[in-house]
Image 1 (cartoon, rainbow, N blue to C red):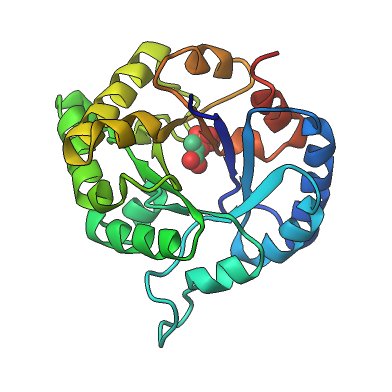
Image 2 (cartoon, rainbow, N blue to C red; image 1 turned 180 degrees about the vertical axis):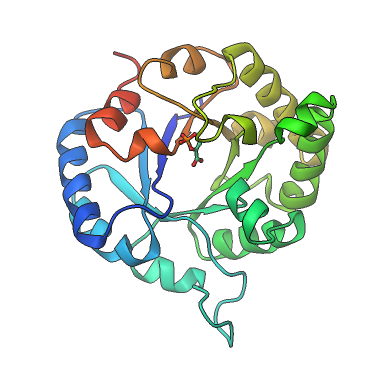
Length: 249
Ligand code: PEP
């Protein structure tokens, strides 16, 4: 039995004050929801305010990226022990925007996931194909390469969470159909079984990300291998994200 995770990725939106306000409202709206892990990942500058606002609620806070070293001469970077020190419990790694605009590779994903897990945090590691890759019939090959290249050493960790995010569905309003999501999730679970072991593959949570909204989450969650959502745009509004968290109705 895998506990669902609903994680909001706020990208480069919201000041510390705005983040605190939204999280206080969200915490009230999701109070009493059982059996769903709720996570919000604001920008680095809002993490401390977010942790304070979430205090005592069931909402966990996470970062959107990290460096793989614990400290060092890496101007502009943020290390996992710094993120943990703020009270964060999650960190996203390998988001397609990091891969597309900031040179993230499967090799850096592997090192970052290791750093996150070593500090006792949960890691939400993202994989997913571009539109060109899907149209070229390469979706499954890309997913296998990303899972084996970035995640194979980490698949037995209970704190690893995988997010399948087809790049063509992120911020576009085009959601993968529940059947497309299920096919990709089942494939990822199969790769995990071959790369690690079947028990670890059965246990790992696989989230779907890509234009998740209150009106499509229930159909996605009805798929046997979809264990939650990584939500961008629809997580910026507390009421909208609370509806996603309350997908069971
Ligand atoms: C994301 O940022 O990971 C994402 C899936 O964004 P959106 O929900 O806006 O498509």
